Image (cartoon, rainbow, N blue to C red; front, side):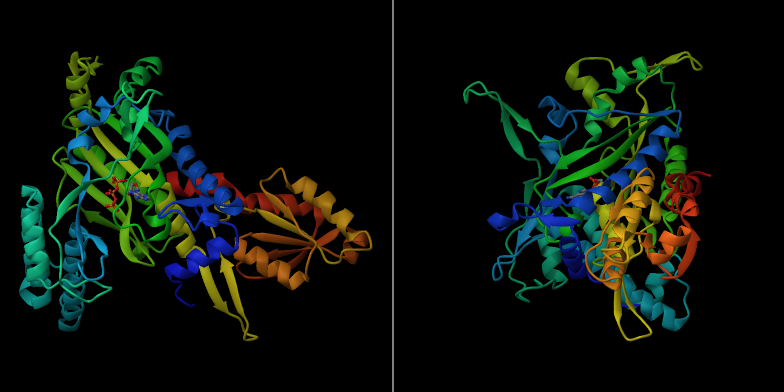
Length: 507
Ligand code: ATP
């Protein structure tokens, strides 16, 4: 099967109505995208999968929907005003802008990947310790040395050292090929706006760069009204905004995107145990979609944020390489304690078992909905070579996520076949989004449904009028079977059932 690159996914998404560039008639807005008719269905199905598994099936997790605008002090307390920035660097020849930290991290990764190939040839296991791998491979060792230097610079916030390392390790611009770099400088990623109509009295606001803070500031409201007992979680799905420096990776990195976040409040001292638990719960959720296990991996943060005492990402093998899909972070009591300090209001929990008040610790799981969309697209889009020499484009989405669950197609546009087909379509609509289509040859219609990821096509022909049987065609195998109309609903319902997916994720 042919490997699908990012460009093919972008074109497919546009051609089939999944994702369009924003304001396209005005030549687009950079790193902002609009979801089309089938994209929004897929996105909603992903949300449903997350929300059901996270909120509806956990009696100790509840949801909220907080506003995008928040009191400006929120972002002072959370540290975003002072430190939510990326180190940026420009290449003077191409004028291309990069994140200096990403350039260094990619170089480390390259050294290590080259080293791993060398180690495989020498028969050294990839499970060996970092130290042993470094001893056995020169390249791996270079990766380790650069990594140590990078972490030191990052911890000290030493931007000058970033540039020195970029120069020492001869990192070149991918466009100009030159090593002619500007200084590294910090760039705050929050979008500022104003609340109020009078310029003089308007309040400066930020569009939220993450949904989490809406959860923290509502901690007591939710805990008290929901009578929640620790450990418990608050979950939310919503938009977040970041003025990203590097934004050329389709919906992987957007300036307006959606997050699905859950903050789990625990007794201090138990957070690392919960951190491990949540890592496993989330991995299982991802694997339930049928992903090859070697396309997902945990990645430990090289540099911990000052408030975290553990942090790992779940990375997915995107067409642009292994990249962060979800973050799992043990954030200590940092956020609640800061909000307590800045607001002057107590954000504590009375633990009746311990007969003690404390600020709870937090383990967070945070996943980008759009990245999840891209992950599902990139593992589902296939170009298949058929035996007759044709190429088939098929989107073999997990059926529970498919935008259209079933298509009903009359073989011909006459002889009463459309009426019969519409009758069947009307029944099947109750399962989920059904689709009726009578234009084009049946072969073309099958191809279109394959490209949209529709698990089943039902074809109504003359025999249907005689004996109430139809042909049911399965997307992945293309196998066709003749079944009685009464069986169709059950066959489709079973295949697209979200509960089956949830069972795989949760049991
Ligand atoms: P990255 O290092 O890739 O910039 P991050 O570490 O800043 O990501 P978090 O702040 O941990 O990301 O955000 C949680 C999740 O939100 C990420 O795992 C990702 O799935 C998603 N996310 C973050 N930034 C973006 C973006 N610009 N576009 C789309 N999704 C994003």
